[in-house]
Image 1 (tube, helix red, strand yellow):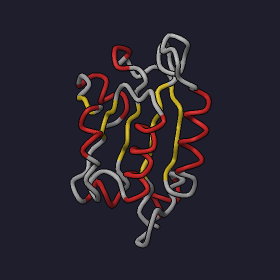
Image 2 (cartoon, one colour):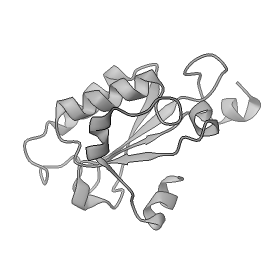
Image 3 (spheres, helix red, strand yellow):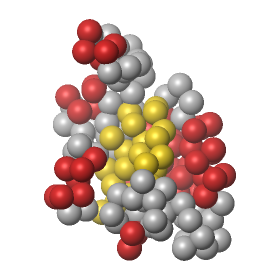
Image 4 (spheres, rainbow, N blue to C red):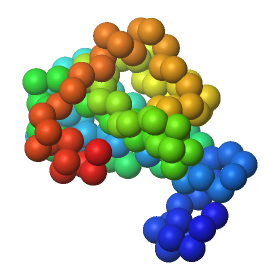
Length: 138
């Protein structure tokens, strides 16, 4: 791991010292709230953290300004994935355990740039506005 990675708190996902994927979970004004009924929001976050422990950083954040697609999850590639051409993947309507499991399986296998997402995730993928993307850093 390089000096810059250590300074930022990066950790290795696999050999080579590349920082891990980051899974950003919107928990703002709509995502993660009763505005999206029938979802165990707290349980979803616990499940994501449990499934990706030691594999990826899972971080809840405030509103990602994609409320019309609640619940939103953004998978950001590891350093290795980014060098291989991976870019952040925005996923909306992640409101059932199967969708979250598909995401965690993909991230555990390598995530953006290293492993193609399962075809079912194409149903969830979307492109946010440039302003929103830049706010998350990708």
